Image 1 (cartoon, rainbow, N blue to C red):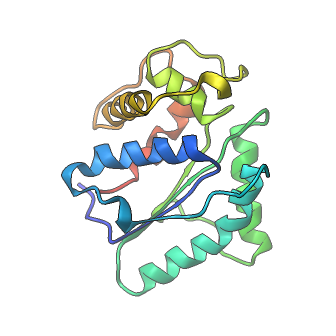
Image 2 (cartoon, helix red, strand yellow):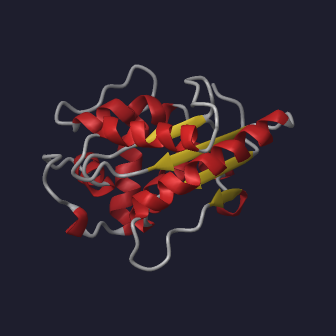
Image 3 (cartoon, rainbow, N blue to C red):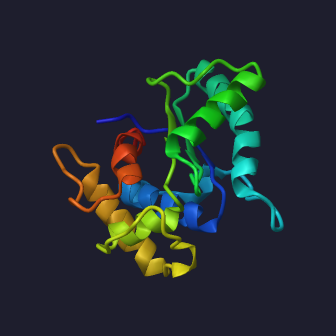
Length: 187
């Protein structure tokens, strides 16, 4: 079992992603969940590009995380960025490039950096986690999940991240590929 984390940093594009991460953390940490102890990076203001905001802030937060770890504390950085109409691999390459452009060492697989890339949007994952068949090329952005939908989706995701668990056979490829990243989120 993973050790308790002193510092949790969260960088996401929008409120839906923030809600999904929040509900998952609430599920993982149970009664120890404390919203105030999580550093939620500000969401982009206005009608800008959320993915661009995440790419611009990513290198800075990776540096912050590494400095925090260097002081002997435990920390995790959780990043979520939609693939939109591109591929999840393209988004991962863009994030790697943002580190390179900022002269920051690339992400090591053993670092407590969780990168989640839903294809097309996080709403696609939410619909799948609610048991609906989804097509990752379709746009579910306007599905308007309720707070109960986020809780139920997070509960299913939590179940899928437990040892020896298997996602549903209709799990979208981007979510299936991200299960290992979700599992990196410690208590």
